[in-house]
Image 1 (cartoon, rainbow, N blue to C red):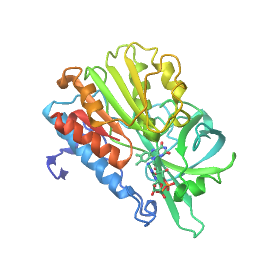
Image 2: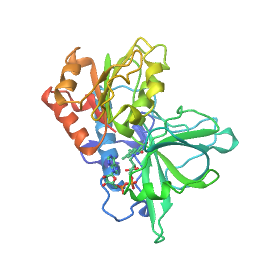
Image 3: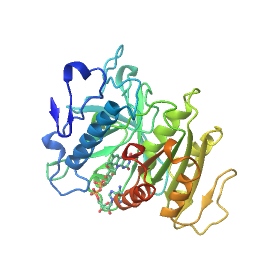
Image 4: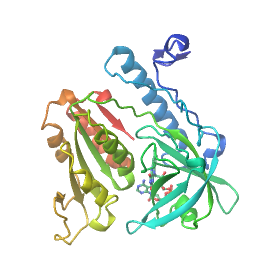
Length: 320
Ligand SMILES: Cc1cc2nc3c(=O)[nH]c(=O)nc-3n(C[C@H](O)[C@H](O)[C@H](O)COP(=O)(O)OP(=O)(O)OC[C@H]3O[C@@H](n4cnc5c(N)ncnc54)[C@H](O)[C@@H]3O)c2cc1C
């Protein structure tokens, strides 16, 4: 197989390379000009995958295993077809975000890899399908259930349908998707910069690193929310600061209550600036640093520009 920019010998490399991302189904695109559209995300996944293959080839990245097999356990979710999962609970966690829990039959697991997301498809009132991506926040190997945190937008097309979900409903999901890969101790420090629901994949990475006692990577999270009441996973993140290698600062752009800070919480009452990120990156040796980004389109663009100003290599930066 020959891909633009890289040559892949399927027979020689099948075990050594990560699996190629799956293309969206025709029904995944709702045709309403979403940004990003599922096709944009597929193109990005494909580019990330090609870059990862190049990095593996030139030795700038190493990884333990890319096998997507779920050896010893049956698959419960598939990239190419939708499976219905029963919604078992709904919990309001911020002013406009909810934690939705789904049952996985037979005590099964989604067997996600760190940073991966899944796609839900719903049917609009006009009978057309609509699908959107969501990143589970449950443990990647959680059994019997998985959880997603979804922010509901006033005018969001998927949000309007999700608002109608009731416990007991069967909801269609497929996946997993996403090309992020990580191996322990391959960098000294990870700086994670996120906004709003962008915390979901970053939270996965943070827990993944912290759950490995042999991983000595230091992590610094810079997390933007509007106010205290809109911080997603606030208590969970605070608990993680008990680990020696996890540090966090909240940036609140619209909070008047300066006394709402919890013990051990670092809070700045303003937006994250490019200089904040640059200063954080420059606190340690650039070579051993990785930057992970997940926020809105414009937020991501600003953060990527920071990394360019500091001459970070493409392989040091990942945008979810
Ligand atoms: C890989 C990936 C993983 C994701 N994981 C999650 C997740 O775990 N939880 C979650 O809640 N969302 C997540 N999203 C976003 C999600 O897929 C939808 O885009 C979001 O739910 C809005 O869909 P909608 O149809 O309701 O809004 P749309 O109809 O698509 O948009 C309507 C309006 O809502 C606003 N809006 C929509 N999306 C955003 C946004 N991300 N930031 C700011 N304003 C926005 C805009 O004003 C927009 O004009 C993820 C997206 C991607 C690409």
